[in-house]
Image (cartoon, rainbow, N blue to C red):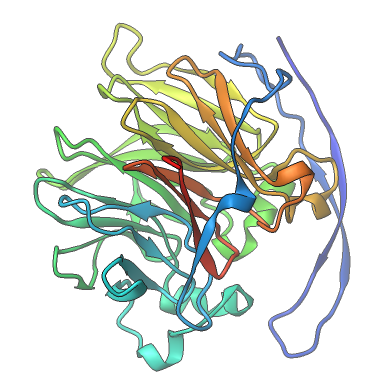
Length: 363
């Protein structure tokens, strides 16, 4: 079924100077054609599993915001998360606080530490780590940094090593999601846009940009393979339990794509799930289900992009089986970027909040 939509927005931007200048800009998004049927419907009643108001919160170090994604080391330690000032932090349960683990930039820490999202112009210098995943065999942590590209750091942490900054001769503009096939060690990651950087992420949506890519990096051969291109804000991703396919959140189009890799349909893509909002990260749990963080609900108005975060759990068939939302429509979470399920706990990340959340599902 074909679908065509035109959107008109009034966008306000500001300069990098100390004086705020409001500019009225007319932005027309080109028509988007969709010719795929989805495995689920966003119009079905959504069952609620856990309410966000039940979440405990673990504040980040002073000034830092945005625990966007989580990773657990091969021994189950953590979680680890990247924050706004370019650090990778590790949650240490024994002392109940976040500890420094790694950095993505050699820039002096005094210039970067504590930078919040209001200092986005410094991100290119200090870095902005987003997707994270450990290789469980080597203990190395792979990092998708919005500005620094693909990086890796050893089990002891420290300064991460930059691996890739471009693919097929095209520089990364906005490196974002990441997952690892633990059997092969292959690293899958997204470049959300080759035209816009993270600090201009809203323009990826408003412009109708389709320069996003899904890629695969082989640490053994050092080769990078382009799997998909012409994507509309590809964001988080997650491999299936047996590695037959990989899911990719296509944020602009409010859907999850499925790219087949090991079956007779290898190399093809279909729509795994249509959603009611703008998806961020996708995380598989031990049961083979997928949690999807939703930044905000669909809306014709750009102002609605900010606020109202929730999450949904998808079955292996792409059906919505549960949601995570605020009680009675209330929600103190401005956005939700990820839900990572580990040992009966739901770890909740947000690219805008100064804390991580956790819900004990065993109680």
